Image 1 (tube, chains in turn green, brown):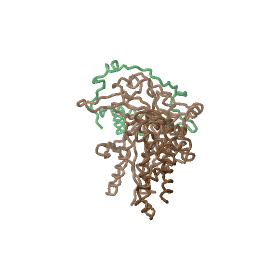
Image 2: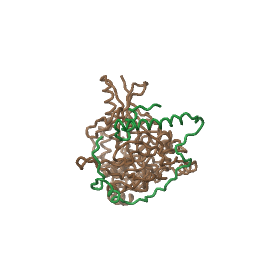
Image 3: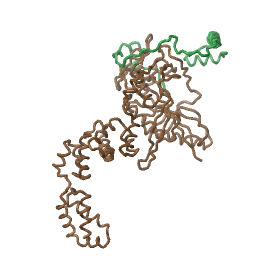
Image 4: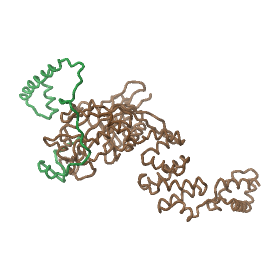
Length: 95
Length: 482
């Protein structure tokens, strides 16, 4: 698959990254080499092989449904730029 | 020309675990902002999600109760999008390997006349586990948005139906049945005001038999009334648009509950690219048959099976059976009452759906808070059946019992509500009525049979409502015939 410069800007927008034209050119060549590797992998014959969703072939351990965490709001909010009435404040978002 | 409305529902059911799906923070509703958001919920660096067994177990319970296949291996994926109430920048959800596969739900849809219903089976496409996001509060703070992450990480089961519903009434019946079911099997508290049960409706219209039309998705409907109104409004809007020569664009819309309108939120052009991929922090979930069978054996008898039992064995209508199985508590109350007066299912059903329900509704109580016990109600009904009291007197016993408590038999005695069963006394009373109304008696005997009601009224009044109506009518008829 050939990556266009427009694709690079789209990926950057999805990741909320602002790229200059120069940065986009660099990202383009780096991403293209990654896509090259993907193309190489996709060329491998995987017929009859069950896909894995994790690199390790083990299953998830489950946690019992009990409350183990206590309220540490003050500690957590001491690292926040702005808080009020217990809420984290962020620039206004309206759908 | 006729349009067919096509509806599919996505329902978010908040699972009733005490801790979150991937952390040990509590899930209780209504806590002070951010006091129930731990490091995992806040997405602090270096944390790892730990899957809650209780959430998986509830998902399996649901799957089994809709006859669905439980995936022996299912996978959690990241759904990527940016929003301040989603601190990780992705929601942990399931994509191509959900825990619950295809199932179905059979519903009774009211026709709108006389409590008649028809049956319909709605196919369930899948149900998957995911975490809820936090809440954004746009009011109060000028130019800023406040974020409360208490809800972040609360376990949700998203239940997706096929586009099988053809009217708002069918969609509401399906949603109600699902709401009944999740409470019945104890996986959700069903509290819609608190957001424990939220519906998204996909609505499109088409000419019958033709291909599906373009759908618009109405988000976040948290009451059955809004679900009904939103679908009706949206379908009419689509019909008007197409008939006016316009076209429908795929879009996400919100229902404005004040104006009763649907309004576009975002169109397909800015539809999100979620870039799902398996979450490397979570391994595949493996569910063995032993666990599934253990959960299966713990499931209570389901509403549908009870409904079938009520109609087949007790001779109740589908409507009655449906109402009596609206919750497990209701069904238990009904069965306990019936136990007191066996063979009187219809009588029990009528009182439960009539006087009991009306009195509960008046005081906004639910059946678990009913001041009258099944044994007490059963006792009143027993006294109707054995002829001790009339239905009218029974209502009085009921009212007294409801407001003052006590025992039905004692109330009957103190209030002197026993029916008159002394035929001699009743005959004498009726003879007196006949003697003091000679002209009406003559008219009656000349064929004006409508006057029977006049005599029956007098007799009932003379007995102070205590006469057994059947017995009284019989004597009255005999005496009037002369």
